[in-house]
Length: 516
Ligand code: GAP
Image (tube, rainbow, N blue to C red; front, side, top):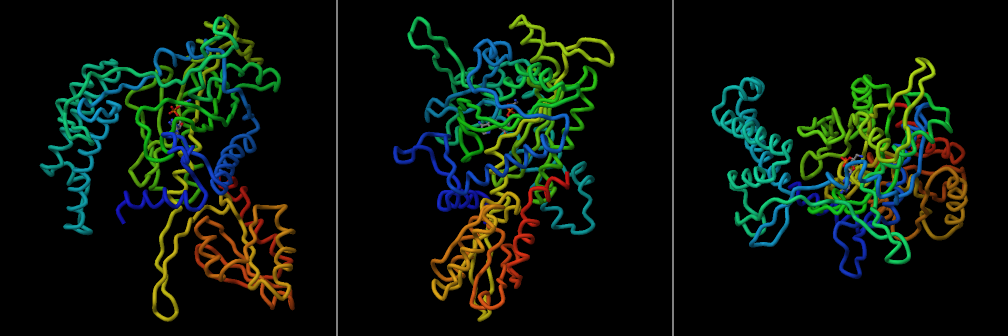
């Protein structure tokens, strides 16, 4: 199936099965804002727990924080967001559509890359086992021509970004003959900067009101509290502060479902280190975060690092962890070595000392910071796109059937166990409820008695429930039930007394955490 079709089906599936709804749908929706339904919120909570526990539970020197969304407006001046948190935008005069100039150019570079990869794949098929990819890339004239164009474009693009040269960005779009995907025309406006922060007024009267911002990242709440946490927790450097919370950005190009939203949630950790050690810690957290992703078991080749061409105003090293979404490799998480930029700047703007006293060296210094920053919603999209599977099943009579199954890691699944009485009579529902009442204290369970067992399995497959048990007449005789496994669809008869332990072991978050 084409990846585009797959993505459309995934979006429809999310709505049909209560994972994600368009915000304000009955009023025709609000662009790039989404609500999480009954299963979505469970999955989202489990993702957050996996992240939180992997940092706060497993590291003695990482602690949590929950800072407010509203902050003193000067914070955003100090952080550079008022002056520099901009996207370069360009309008097409015919379609009146607005685009990010950098995204248009990146898509053009991806086209060259696509052409090269196509040649490589064609050759791989032609030459079979004897194919030497490195040699082919180094000698094939079509590959070389496209690589040359790509390198030239890349060099020009990076320079324009680093110089913040908006005229040059426009010129690249013109020279590359990039057309508006809607109108097909190349009738472009100039490129302008557009600040992404939302603002509102705080205060009851117009005279006393103050313009404040909805935070565009949770990180600043950590920076301005770092000494509070350090002193009250008697933390020694190196140490980290982790936070999960909402962030807001007035994105120009908001598309691809929950990939780019205007209201979203971030999971960020700032790790405070002695100056001069930041690049070592950057490498450490880079590897640790990649392992966190790969532990979910969707396949190592689904992830890659992408080092930044243009470093943000606060960074001396930066990389993204990218995931292979149905629409290509895209950023899920950013890891930045943010130097002492933020703390120094807050020191300057607030007039308060933000130095750490190191008891071992008897010296004061402003720590350097390594940040890991991941979007909960983007992680959610990563997981559901990797988990969504359509299967054709062969039945015993030779005919075929199909099912949609969300192959979610058990620890993240919204519902861990579904309990079915085979029929609605003979005391089976009562027995099933007794079992459920025992299990519900340990994990999320669901009771279902409507429709055939087959239909009930399909519904649970669609929401990713890893285990279903059926209570039948034999249960009343010998206290055994059948347990059915989502991915293999195999069934096994087990004693009720061992059920709790069996499921608990399989769905425990520690199964993931122990692999880190
Ligand atoms: N404090 C650093 C920071 O905010 P970022 O790369 O701008 O860095 C970090 O954002 C992560 O937040 C991204 O990797 C992405 O997962 C998520 N994110 C950023 N903008 C988003 C948006 N508009 N919608 C959903 N997630 C977003």
